Image (cartoon, rainbow over all chains, first blue to last red; front, top):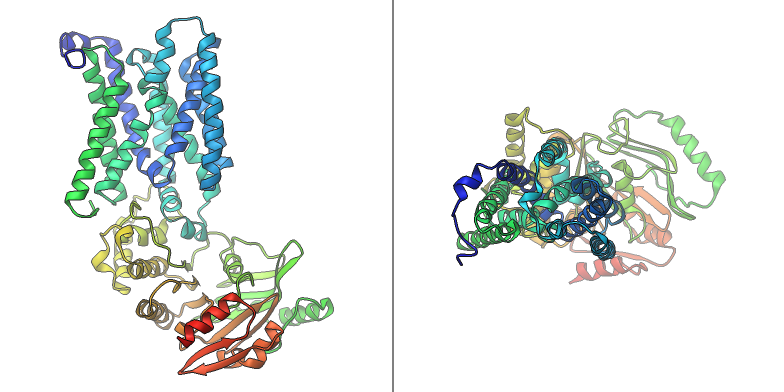
Length: 280
Length: 295
């Protein structure tokens, strides 16, 4: 237990620039991931997000090998994956198999690329499990711009996207361009995923892009309340996870995933106690 | 008006007909829905052609026919989702286009997923401006008032704040009617809205639709394979079978002679306690309807 939880020297750590960067990165990621999570859940895109994360990992591994920025590699990999999933698999059944095929190939390729990489082992491991050390100030600039872009686009397309996600038949009848929105949303998710990969690791991206949305859906069906609650849960998990990981010096992903999971359990319990999902 | 059974085959005849129609009524500004010489074909299969149809404001048109006869495709044409291969289609005088205003759409009742992240009022609100881009910060009070009125009109105010996935099929379908009416449509397109509802719910929903066309003069195009629940409301019937069609009042169209001609086989139409029973049409659904009506 003492290996897992400790606060020795946390005060000094908080004064370090890279630690502060990590908190800023976590806060930004929580904002975008939480904002997207309810829509990811409503569209049944959990597997797509996982696939996108693995492809971000592949992109990051390739970037590591060639010697360019890992975040650029992750963004490229995730956006390509998101576009492929968004364009090829509009139908649920087909989509799942397309994701499975691309995911398996991408993951295999990523592992091969990592094996070929001769540099520091912690860089390799960081892509899979996440690491706050990976965040430097250039990453912060990328994070800020991607956050702004994703939130701005989301503000414009939110209503038609919600319509198309929750009520597709009527949305099509009312002229919502669902064929356009599907790849667009996949790209938004891909950008968010790419940001999340260096921080929480490719394996645990779902902990911030699915769990907050799934948890919020248990307690409210008010779209705005669900979005705000999902952002709150994502922030709690990411900031809390970052804080708890400081003194033990372990990867933050385990802490983030655990806090998010506990929040999900609490939301389920609240939903159960209320007897039914209520309006917020 | 169109009492002759039309067939897709003779090209000379249909050309003559469409030219006659276009010279007779070039614009017809009063029609809520206007089709002129309309034709839709998928590959070599012609769904229908030479279709001339005016639906007046306040008129209730039932669209009947077996599966695959092009009923839903007709709705897609009116919604601007399916282009015509020939002819033209106008909604309230404007060429039909995707996302046009002035149209309300009621789908068939499908159980909404329990975790659907919407409340009753949200579902209705999407019918008002869900297709518009932008954050929608302006006119929120106006929006709230319109949604509240639509909910009130269908008697759904009590579950405005309930999650839609937890409502019964009948309650969900009331919300669907409110969702279609909230935009104050000139034309109400209904795609089997009574399917899988019990009799009492069928009556409620068709009464709400009827009220709308009486009070607001909206035209109703009502696709169904079972005319009986709406028979008292229907002004005219468009009956589609294998590329042939017939337009007229229920008394004109729903007869043994007319349906036998359309189906090209002996079909008998019997009235039983004010309900129409169609016997002998070679279609699963008509058999099914007949069974439903007898029992």
